[in-house]
Length: 130
Image 1 (cartoon, rainbow, N blue to C red):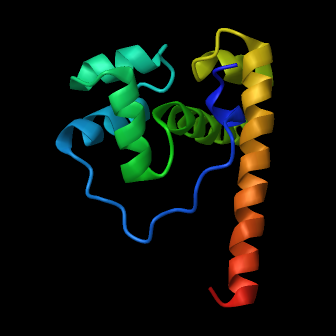
Image 2 (cartoon, one colour):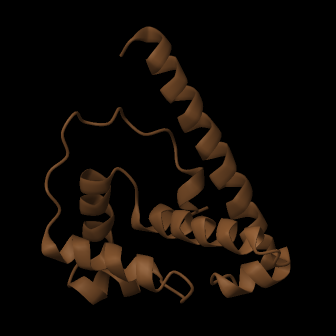
């Protein structure tokens, strides 16, 4: 399965991330502006002159996440806003770029699990004084 959210655990984050190139910033802005469009890894990479594997590797080094996971995170932020406006979940899925309601629900569940894990790790670091 090529689902970015089901990828194995990542290595610890480096203390300092390298400054993103203008091409990486261009991809990040594309994702933020066009999250409701069908953005495949190949399309995102071509937009900024990368191969898909180059983009994935460099994006993760600079931003700590993959382009695909960042796309899901942008979609989930938009979903939260639409939920707060009382929109139905099926409508939200279509408005934020999902052609499959089932895929939307899966991404919502994975995003929530990831968010909970991150919150737990932050709380643990706080208790340990790290």
